[in-house]
Length: 76
Image (spheres, rainbow, N blue to C red):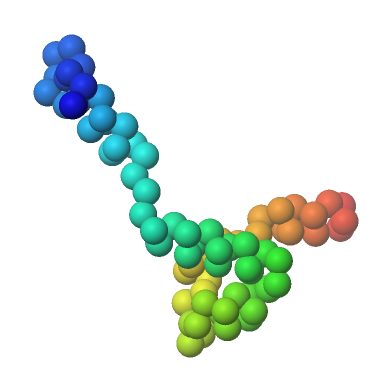
């Protein structure tokens, strides 16, 4: 059973929550790609994900900003 609409609106509470918190199975692939890149490097992530080039892997796997912060901290 759907929740009643918010006062003055026609959208249900579930409708608002669903729109805010959409989830898709591809998020699992992106998460795995990011983990693999961080732990094992871009080339290993590319091979495991089956991408023909690292350019494709870079789309899926987020960069490790923490690694950049640590490098800057060492340099000073």
